[in-house]
Structures are given as C-alpha cells and as structure tokens.
Amino acid sequence: QVQLVESGGGLVQPGGSLRLSCAASGRIFSINSMGWYRQAPGKQRELVAAISSGDSTNYADSVKGRFTISRDNGRNTVALQMNSLKPEDTAVYYCNAVGLELTKFKPFDSWGQGTQVTVSS
Image 1 (tube, rainbow, N blue to C red):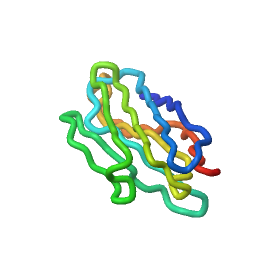
Image 2 (image 1 turned 135 degrees about the vertical axis):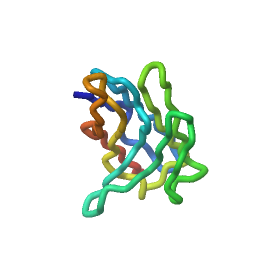
Image 3 (image 1 turned 60 degrees about the vertical axis):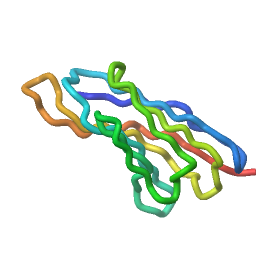
C-alpha cells in the first residue's frame, strides 16, 4: 500500500498565503502524477493542480496565477503554494498520487486524508 500524509492547512485571511505539503510512503516503484484536489461543502471534489513526473503542470482556471504546484521526485513529495487566497478557496484539500508499486508493478491511485483550508476574515 501507498500512504499519503498531508500537512499545512489552516485558517488564513483573504489575500493571505498557505503552503500544503504531501509525502508518499510505502513500496513505491514510481509515481507518474501527483496532484491536489479540493472539496467544498455541498460541492463535488475538483482538481486544483497536478504535476507529472516530468514536471508538466495543470491548474484549474480558478487558481491559475495564484497557486503553484511543485514536487520532489527523490523524496516522493508534492507541495502546493497558495497565494492571494480567497474565501471561495475554502475547502478540504486532498493529495493524490498515481503510480506503480514495487510489488509486481501493481498500479496504485492513493489519496491523503485531507486537510482543511479556511479563508475568512
């Protein structure tokens, strides 16, 4: 099994910044894609940002220019730097990783437990 552990959520005022981090552990052969999703109350989970093993990135239109995703392939970590936060960014943020396990190169698609981000004055 591959486990993901997130950190860095919290309460911030509008216009402020937060940095989320996520570390993957377990019998990992390779991680193809890592990303961040979020789910606000009463809404579906949505992609915020994703990054491939080759550092290609993809962002939701609503966060372009404000959020930056980065990863450390050697440490199997991914981070999301969130600037100019808005109240509508309030949600539970989930880390996701897709790749192959060492055991028979079994594919995995793992999720973290989620971290709350609240943007409010």
